[in-house]
Length: 110
Image 1 (cartoon, rainbow, N blue to C red):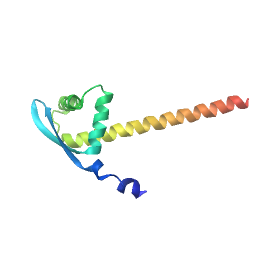
Image 2: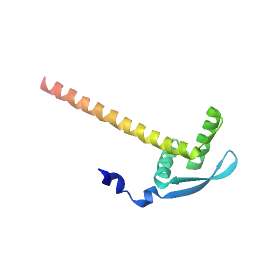
Image 3: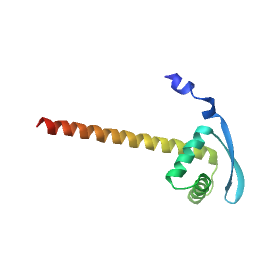
Image 4: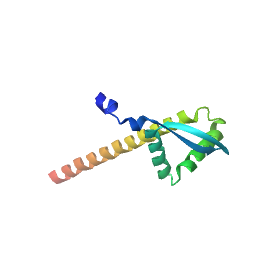
């Protein structure tokens, strides 16, 4: 089992720093490559470019709580939430498919 985790390509967990503009200020965000990949996917699902998505998220956090505290950690947790939601959606879809197969088997048996 540990090979799944330990056997990752080093590039996937290497840090990558990107410059962005948040709240009118230029700043840098340093995340592992894997998180940038997930953030790009999330932005794509929102029909936004990544910089626009980051700005929107930052603005929403400010609106809700008045401060971003640790925006980089928030981004990592957002990625985990997104991946967990997808995993949950896939599990629900698999359950529905299994129920449909079972129902089809019952109908065929009658």
